[in-house]
Image 1 (cartoon, helix red, strand yellow):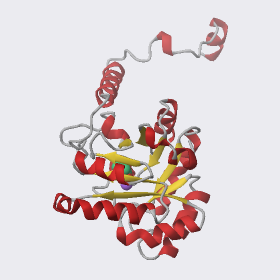
Image 2 (cartoon, helix red, strand yellow):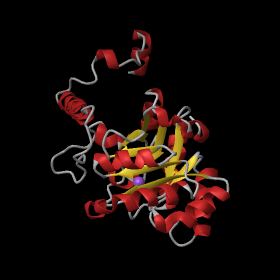
Image 3 (cartoon, protein in one colour):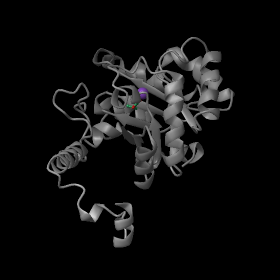
Image 4 (cartoon, protein in one colour):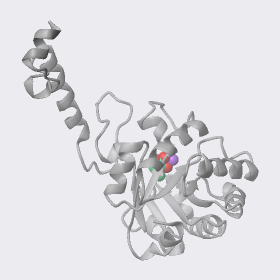
Amino acid sequence: MTVLKLAREKKRKITMVTAYDYPSSVHVCEAGIDIALVGDSVGMVTLGYETTQPVTVEEMLHHCRAVKRGAAGPLLVGDMPFGSYEVSPEQALQTAYRFVKEGGVDAVKLEGGRTRTEHIKRIVEGGVAVMGHVGLTPQAISVLGGFRAQGRSVIQEAGAFAVVLECVPAVVGRAIADALEIPVIGIGAGPHTDGQVLVYHDMLGILSHPHHQRMAPKFCKVFADVQTEVMKGLHAYRREVEAGAFPGAAHSPYAMTPAEEANFE
Ligand code: KIV
Ligand code: NA
């Protein structure tokens, strides 16, 4: 998948899933997903932060490199973390260059609408593809018309090749997707956007201990129950080791001949 190809994909549904390391990257790639996003959600689902705010550029690049090694097919997008682009368009471009050169990404993503147009423009002029990321609070929905105009003139005209639209009613998702020429990739934005994105750990049921801080959001369908399988495996291992049942003969492959054994003793 390339940025150019993706720009022409408005007619069909685009799939995007986050990936944070080599295994998740291989999985996303093997599943034929169009876009692998190294999201700053990495901070919450793999590093245990309570928000995405503490995530650093160095942490993002570390994860981008791992995902890069596993994802041959999907377009690779890296999230520029909080504090790494807001200061100025120059800061944004410098950070974007690091993501390309040190992280190996095809494109960067940054959050924000009107306040980020200069940043997006500068990065695109500098030669790096940008995915926008906007959302709406319920209060802002009454200004739908205004938002449509803003969406069209702001993110798209700044040069973004696609935009993530997070947590808006389906009717807003449809309106934005209709208004824009670039693909609109929704998360909690209803079925009418040009594509969908979900967080790997949420959609696969990887972290669903009831007491854990990370619960899949309401809009996220949980397509697998990985945690149950993981816990089954870990509990079985513990039981077998404690009972002396593992390793048995089948998993003790380093045999000696009787002669060697006698010699060893
Ligand atoms: O960080 C992330 O995972 C994201 C997606 C939710 C779009 O930005
Ligand atoms: Na993000």
